[in-house]
Picture 1: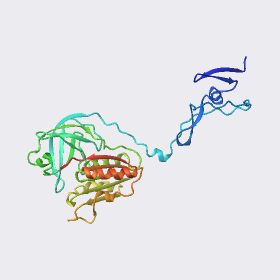
Picture 2: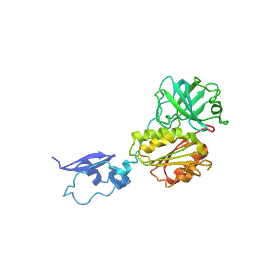
Picture 3: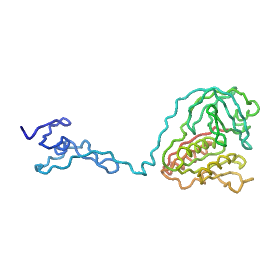
Picture 4: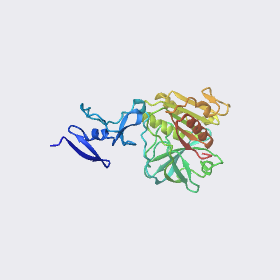
Length: 318
């Protein structure tokens, strides 16, 4: 029996000696060549050009080549994000069942729908109050963290002339008012994963921030969370009961900010929100909800630091 045989690899004849593996023979003939892969590990791939065959006979056989996938470091594993695939848009009908004042200019509106809507914390929905144009609003939880499966809880500004729905709350829009819901919409929803979680909200932008924060405390209790909440008027910082719950569950970095100094409590800092977003890191994940100027300013800061940013735009007047 002959001590040599031949086989074809990538259209080229390769001579194989007794005891050789096909992979070793192909490497020796230059048909394939080792290349450097990710993280400096060596992967076997197609060579750019064949290398010269070894001149000396293979007197000592090397150990068989083993292919393995590089194992990610612990730091890399901590930055892997579990991308949640949102449910398909659906339509629901419901009625207004609660209108509760939360602050000087903010009310909680609860819409009870006929069937549960699949949404993630931080998602928005398009709500059409009968007789009014559709608006994009962010479902959240009550300030004490409660809600029912067939309820959608919204935080809306009261009597704001910029939006017809907000202006009609408590007057034309009363208990029992019909509402049509379509959703989810938007891409600012919560994604479990690694890195510090920075949650930034202005006024009723706290609604989606509260939903994300509450979910993160249950799903990722060890994840570091930083919360920065602001308003033009200190009287509109209505979310203190929710922030107390976050503190009780281990969230220590919570900052309240107000533009105006009138009746500003000692724990409320002055200035814009962005002045209190320092030390951003590449590994940070930022969710920001509020008006266009607030969202845009935070997006710029996040981009400058190379951090992920998921904006949630609150329409003017809401």
